[in-house]
Length: 445
Image (cartoon, rainbow, N blue to C red; front, side):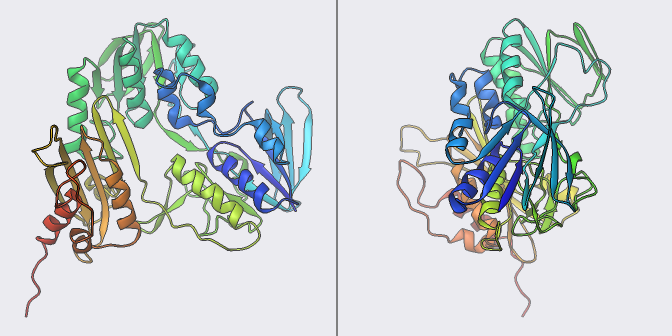
């Protein structure tokens, strides 16, 4: 069996390492544009901020390791065409310019995502940088060392993490976003208000509900004014890197590849995984584009498991994610009030504030927790929390509850341990479930 894999970050690396183990007789070839494999891009801000000192620790595999497993690795090769009828691949060696031709029995698309670059005057200037891969991370480190003021455009996860990294490096930082609050895709205003207040108290200049009109050599001009700056980092978002396969396999309107429960595309001999893919979003049951490393690694592993036939179905995703910013820990899973409203879904939510452990302990921090549920079926649809204590693993518990269609009543009485070092006799997840259960409308007799 000849297997060709295009791309080798999270999903591609997970796929090939598992395929090499499961199918030792297979001929596996990987095509990768970059000169490295398996860069952990979600650690980019930690690398830029100096928390991670050794760049090598952000790679969870290496070309040497993959080759030692019998995998043929073609680094700095750009695939230019896939003929799905003939099952052939055309690529170009980016170093020599040589054209390369190959054939496959099974193909894995793991081309990931690429940064969205807004059509703004000056966006291609030398002092405007992107934040996605290893080379870009090194460029940011090199260029930011000489900058006193840095402007970050985009208040998603990478954007706010870079704000923290630059601030802790002693830089003046401005954060711009066209939406009126940060992290709006992950948390409701109650939670983002806390983060924004913390940012402002630390001197971070927030320019929310402003869009960039143009970028000049020494300033950024927005709909709200001008910002003198030395360096601009664009973190507007990501889009599926799937132009290569357009018209050849089924996709969502944004280009995300559709896959079935066994990671097959509409062409049964082509599999896909990672940030190039749509995945089933369990709170709604629909396909959605949720580019997360956790989704990518799971999907890549499932590609290998199902390469020769359906064995293990994917379980879908809740889009579960967590974040640490300065002294605050936050996490979310599934629907928020904001995302439910965007999808025109009728939901109900309860919010509680509880100490994470008894007040007689030396320290005890407030936990703000919100759970979202279906008012009719009572099924949990999402949850989010924030605290100075790191209790974010509770959101993994909520993710499991959403994935398994638990009701708020079941959450209320789930068996959680109690130990004063860690929690209260009634766990705050129980208390959220109890608060939601109290809203049940009594059935008429």
